[in-house]
Length: 208
Image (cartoon, rainbow, N blue to C red):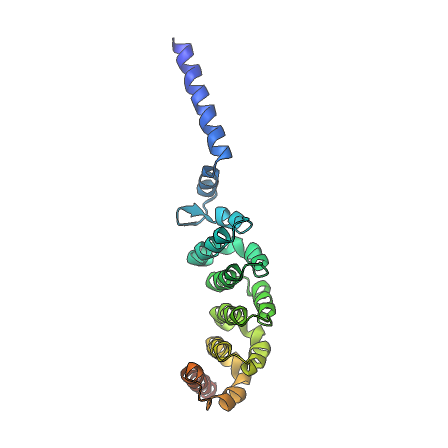
């Protein structure tokens, strides 16, 4: 009986191991063992793999979860950069936002966001500027492209670009002249952020 009981316990253990190995629970086990960050109950590796899911809703959910993880989601950066070219618009926007919230590896991420900044899609450009702005000072390499975008045909894009330049700070002072030209724009969407950005940057410049 004892031998049978041992075999029964061993068999149950093998079944459990196989069940974990072939089910989504394997992500939880591996993530826990690897010390990964968890968002919405799943480790970062689960959300990284979800970025390749055929269902765009699942890919979008992955970008949201990774954004919530902030810097702890750093391992997802390569997959999120790839997601900037996703066929689904909301996945692209979510990826740009997540990359900004993670805020790491600016030398890789900012150029990828700058590329999205030239998209034909107005919303792509808005989210690209948002992602860049979230990097703050570390996005100083994007200043020339951001300044060029102050001429964007969309006031919403110009608004986000002004905000991004303000977040970058003194290293974006080359944008002040063009911001000053646009600050008198009567469009209510951009008047406040433009005034705020010009004021902050002019103030910083005066203290340098």
